[in-house]
Picture: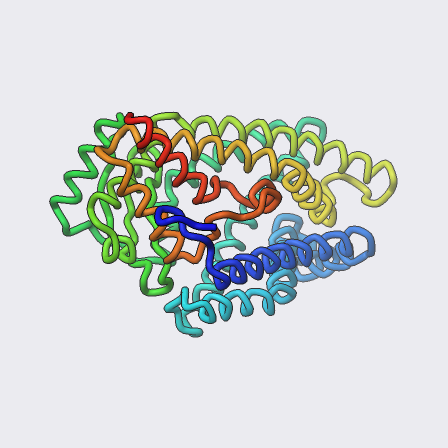
Length: 376
């Protein structure tokens, strides 16, 4: 049952989210199955041998060829699911993107993934060859540094590959948001209009970047359909993450998880060598096993990490309630976002537990109403 402030999910929203969820599960399952097959058979070794021949036995070049082949196979296997996802967004009238534009995005995404994966894998196997006993500690430190670097450069180097951004022309709104950011104790380097409507009918906003790249981005789909008060409420939530230092805390959590992951990977790789699955741990045919360890760890920790994320989101919501004159714009913005993005307002307990990094919208609206009712 819904209410004026908390309407019930439409059958369309329920169907869309159910299909979208199963699509994600199928995609993850397909990738997992590919890794298992490559490890359990001689498939990975065969790809390694092909890579060596193509690279004229040069190790570093062979690693790059191997990564490229692995990504091509994975992309080919998932192409049907990717296209179904593209059609799903159109079926539910959530996408404006034409097929040609989508294919071009897929190509850019693949090439960007190849560059990033190629660099990371090259570095990992370089460290394995140089420090076979302690490579995992060096790799952990390196990955942590690269994680922070990517968070810094994403707004200026990565996002513009897929979307157009321009400085926000609404000076009144811009000044209002900058003042709010200053009150939250952060300095933004600009407020930008994000041309999301070229591809999607969904709305979004974010506080992106770190340090000199910190900026506010507002989707044009948000600017065109929401009042300044509602946009201010949405940004107040984002600023709540800064106030509560969620970025630094998330980096710390990521550091701990990554350290456990690399330790586990090292143990598994040495066990695989002992079992004669591979001659040495620097045999890059063991890359699927390395990725499998990471995948299993991510699946095991996902409910806990989602719970931690939902806790952070609730803290950010409370900061929003404290920062805006009235919570009413937050409530209306949440419901408009749910309708525009076809989000589930009230997913089942298990769906929220396993899949949602944000609290259910119904719970967020109820928390705002309780805050309002308490007269705070």
